[in-house]
Image (cartoon, rainbow, N blue to C red; front, side):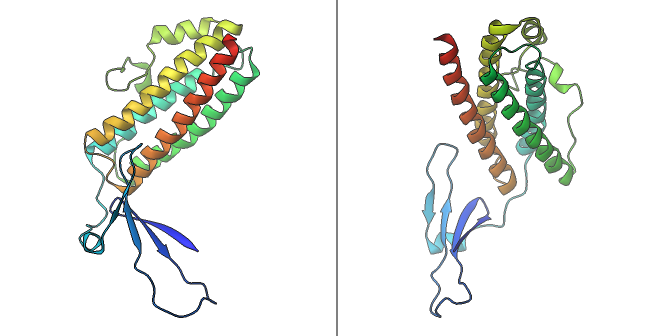
Length: 215
């Protein structure tokens, strides 16, 4: 049976013995240092493993990422909140529900991360400002108002277009985190990778739905 342990940004896969396993020498754990999202990891030698530092603490880049991503997610919830009374496509409603569920859960995780580290939570209206420069993909108040005014098939198409752009902005924020030297703390690294994976999947689903609705 295998177990994965995170240590100093490296994933340690260690074989564990069951109660009825035969006695014998235990192989040294294999340590793989993960690359940035989309890049393969690298196995570390025993000598390199011995030099691994203690898990690093969070940085200002991690804190900023969490604070801004909360505001980013809150705006996505504003967008999904428009779906029930405006969408025609059942598939749009289903994908909006998935986004709403996942992003509510992630907001709670980010708030807990900040609280546990004594960092400030973003203000309740932070997501209403036009922050596209620091939070890519954020809609302006005018764009949100335009979305709210549409109905039916027009809403379905505009919602998908705007939400894809919004999700792509989140992926850019993950890239910016690592570029700023963040993501070294195991918890922030794990969360950023999950956001990158989940929103990438949702982007593909929305693009496929766009193609079907246009057909």
